[in-house]
Image (tube, rainbow, N blue to C red; front, side, top):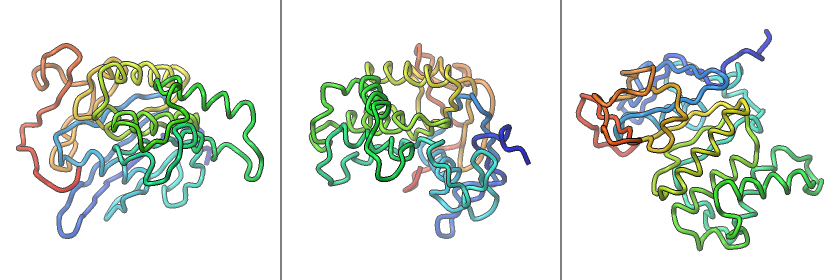
Length: 254
């Protein structure tokens, strides 16, 4: 089978249980190449669980997940995927510099044992510039603010030059200027043919980038189409913040 036309992301009848509680209820998600898709919804709606399931980071209780036509359990071409988790502390206790963390994004593109090429170094510098951290490249990641650490993780994903970018709450705790810069970077990646799947509680400056919104509530998709109109969101310019009719779930996961 020719997999060149297979969707970058496909989850079919995805069900996830945490203990005896179902977090996703038979969710179907298909993201086509070149799309910019936002997963929206209240805290606890299942947004992050869905993308983690799509990437194989959370095991599906039922259903299937595939990346570029390959079941995620057998997927090995991870250089095609860039993943930005929710802010975890980019340094993870290791005294690495910002540049070293971002450079890790190039490892999947390099031959083991060979030194970085000029191309690798240029891409790393471009990624640092794109997120506004070129002047902090030599600083230990642990000295950065939470928002700057998040930008470091984004730069690491950009450095891999992936075909699919998956971002979990990329603007959480990030100042307005950085959000604008991120929106510009993602717009450039989409213009170059990349696919973007991101989780957001509100879109802000990312709204113009998004051509499809998938809204979750209580582990089910309640909307799949254009970004909801102000009737279902805050009406402030650039502020898209979905309020599903169901009461927000107070759970330990998102």
